[in-house]
Image 1 (cartoon, one colour):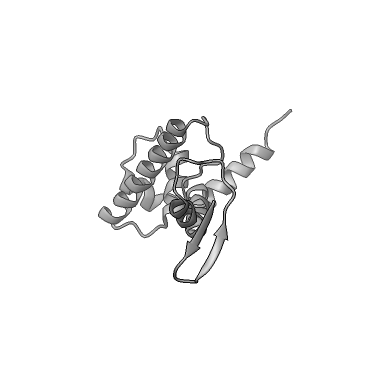
Image 2 (spheres, one colour):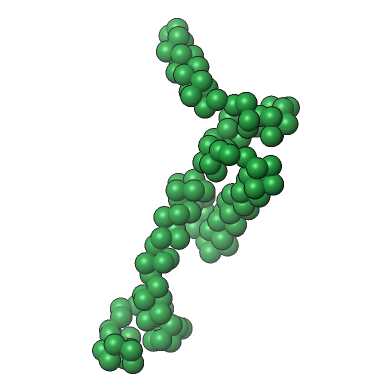
Amino acid sequence: MKYYDVETQRHYTYLTNNFDLSAKTIADLYKHRWQIELFFKWLKQHLKIEVFWGYSKNAVKTQICIALCAFLLVAIMKKELNIERDLYEILQILSVSLFEKTPVNTLLSKFDLQTFEDQAQKRLFSLDF
């Protein structure tokens, strides 16, 4: 597809297999591809999406939606409860405390990640094989 950009006064040629979209749309997608790359990098880093469980459009959208909802719930909880920890720490604590019956604000205020990691390493190395 060929596209002429009025701003830069240049002709661009794009290779694509999507012939349903206009040349302008394809050009805009390429122009904003860096933002798209940064968005997916952010998703993978913050939402811990390492692998997509399905490859259909619906499966990917569903997985991203669920991960975003979980992230936003934690962000809202952090703001509403005035939690000083960063979101990554909160997500770590919640992931290892899923079955705790302790209130969340108490759990987050008293949980020491360093102590937990030290105890986990001690347990790991004290296993007899």
